[in-house]
Image 1 (cartoon, rainbow, N blue to C red):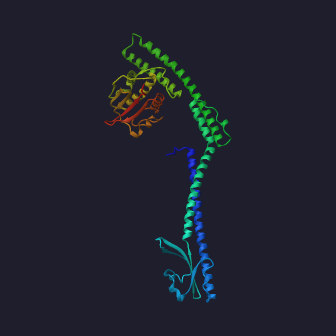
Image 2: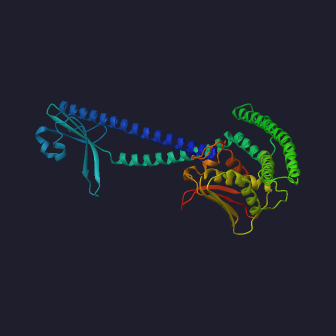
Image 3: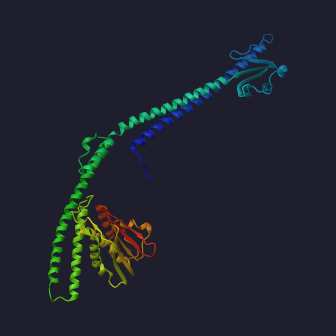
Length: 432
């Protein structure tokens, strides 16, 4: 899942985390290097002092112990070693610097370093108290942690300032696009930006908008021309059919066929009007003050779809539980119901198709093979057809219904039946 955080927020957080992490890494490296170097220097100095004291004791055996040039210590011979502390006696033959931890009077552990050098029967001990050094290390650690947090805060402030400077052209571009979307009219963007990456993006958007506008204009002109050319022959068919129906010598069979031709021409006219509404790409359908009776349109659609039943053992029923009107042209509602009811008849080989009206909605319930729940939404995509039915079809009917519903604020959906085989197509209208 893609992040929905704003670009500026992500840039600020990234810069602050980078600054904080870099400061913490530098502080850790500095403390580690300091500890290692200090340890080596102290050990080398202690061992050097122990050697010097040992040499002075051997060269001047009758003089008092010289001690150390830097620290106090003890010079003993191997015969008087028993007078020293037990921890020192065990280290008498181990030349080098040793870390010793002993309990102190205050209950804490006392830490000191002991340098030992045994040469020529003389053993020199040199002790160095590191407790104060450890206290200094703690103070230094606290100071470094404070510095890390300070640098992290500075990184955050710097990130805020840099994000505002860096993203200013991008924010301006987004603001202009929002204004164009509200105004519904696009103006050239490239002249308002420098010749950089944002300027290239603005130029690309201008070129895309120009191509899209030209394509929309071509489609609009095409739809207008096609609608004009199609309406003329349909009007001729409708008027001729009306004249033929008035002939007194028509048989009942011919009269029924003329009625079918009349319904088909009216259905084609309604489809053209609905497609023209879609081609205008308006967010709210132009109602032109028309109020349509849903039950009447549903009854007309059912009658027009009866020939599609052919010889199938199928019953179709219209159940009206209450009056229902919608603020939309009858042609739009007719196209939507023709697709929903026509699909139910086509997919149902036997059983019944029930059209139920009431409570601000209309439902088409069939006893066909049904649909899978995961395919319910996919059926409204262009080019997608249902399974288990033969015949021709481009899979555009339900896609047109969805676009019409979006235009008028209606909700259309499909779901499988829970009590039996079949599917339920629901069309919920916008409250008046």
